Length: 169
Image: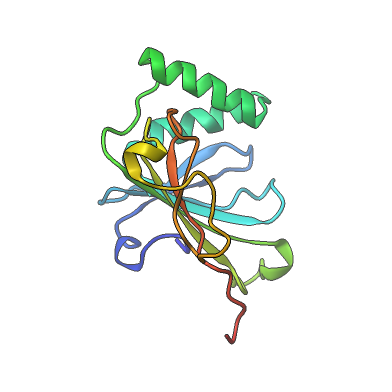
């Protein structure tokens, strides 16, 4: 739930991993948010929450990753499937929140995360720099300036990467 906006946490659906590493529903929610627990089989700590309309896209990515596909092959497969209509994409902009930290910043016993990092993504399939007015890469001179990644594709999304802040600052 660490990635979810505070006002969405109580009603979010929560997905996690069973002993076999399969994604299972831990809690059925009442709002539009789906939160995915940290995968204990992956290095580092990463939890995410996203709009339910992204679930076909996210589930397909997990399925292809499980088949051993590379990130590029997953992208290409989903691109073909989105263009053919096999993969359903959201019809409106949809959000994703990702909260992450290296293993040494996570207390596995208490679940406490020190200096975690929250970034934001807004998926807008097929959007371009021209249709959004956004740059194609982060502007190093403007902290947290949004930019568009994978423009013109099924995976087009706005990236918002706030500056990293250390605890106590």
